[in-house]
Image (cartoon, rainbow, N blue to C red):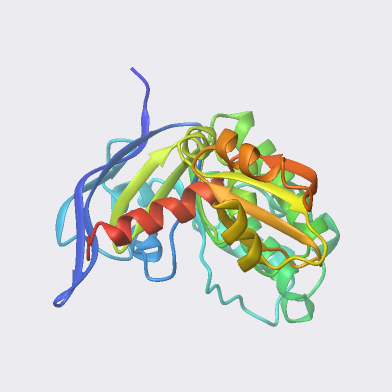
Amino acid sequence: MTTKAIECHGLTKRYGPQLALSDVTLAIPEGRKVAILGPNGAGKTTFISLWLGLLHPTAGTCSIRGQSPDAAIRQGWVGAVLQETVLPSLVTASELLTHVGRFYPHPLSAAGCLALAGIPELASRRVDHLSGGQRRRVAFALALVGQPRLLFLDEPTESMDLDARDGFWRQVTGWAEEEGRTICFSTHNLAEAERYADDVVVLHRGTLVAFDTPEQLARGAGVARVRFTAHGESAADLQGRLGVGIRALSNGGRFEAVGDNLDTLLRAVVPDPACSEFDPLQDTLEDAFRELVRSHDQGGTTA
């Protein structure tokens, strides 16, 4: 039987009268990379905090490898990089990692952590001399000290430029895949989630609205798009003439027809003599995410 990295049943959290998380049930096998998505206020931070033992549920249960979060953390199974991570200033990265390692039974060396984080050159650099992106990488190195089986990352690449972000994910995925470790990460970068996640959890208003692979979610989005050029036209005029939804793109003369059926869009747009340079687009995770949130709002579900 496949070991469950995390599992919850009816997981609910209230802050007084406010319902932050409502009746969430799911199970994630070990060895998966899972993106946790949702608009601001969706319950993502509460969800992660429950797994880290920083909060306790109002109702329901959650377990990590069959044990409570508190027990799993005591055994060193869990590492985390939180969005608001404050690091001591007057120490080097190596000194900080060595000190934190003393709290674990089988710590990874400071040099090993820095190598896995892709920043061995920062070993002798003082933390207060590092950029925001470099501090995030040191925080990631700290999360690896105890050699965890499960790693939680809250907006891990927020302060990183594009090259640093790509390097970070190469290190993270390589580390996870070596021994079948599990990664759960929250992000507002949907392209990042689509590229690196095996599974996607979508939360909205504290409710679980989707849990599937990025490919399956995108396939079920029901959003079709055709981009095209129409110089001297406006979105309103095109929409009235073509009978399909039209929105103007940022580069002049380019538009996007949007609907629920690609064939219908092509039949509307292609015959028009003002339209050219057609580019039918595949559904993306971003399309699916927007549609899930919109449908959930229209359904009137509140938390």
